[in-house]
Length: 130
Ligand code: C2G
Image (cartoon, rainbow, N blue to C red):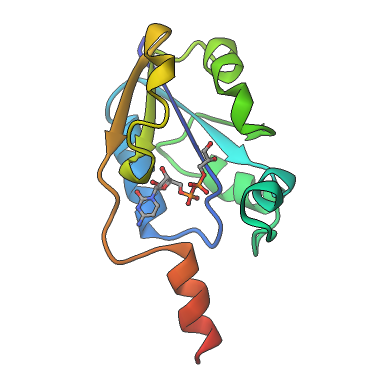
């Protein structure tokens, strides 16, 4: 069985999120998704996500293409997570291209093209201007 792992915040869940999860799942037999915690987001972006981690995790876990979710507490723990969930392949969007190549000694790493013209940040801007 080929196991896939991916990571993300998945805040204000949109079709770009769905696309990458579907395409990641299609590359193997089992998809595990690490959901960035609220605290990790704050430390990375100096703002909390709009939706809290429990809700973000519940939405992603409910998807047909997703088998398992867990909370990603720290960006530095990727190697441990890959090993813990016995992933054969790490999938990320190409906004992260090259950033996770250091894990190629324990699993395959691929970067998939992002869905154009949609992002959580843009959605926040659109809603603000309504
Ligand atoms: N994504 C995409 N197309 C978009 C928007 C996002 O393919 N239009 C992908 C991103 O490339 C990422 C995933 O959806 O692979 C989740 O995106 P974010 O929620 O923005 O995740 P991020 O905050 O980048 O968290 O350890 C890494 C982090 O947890 C990644």
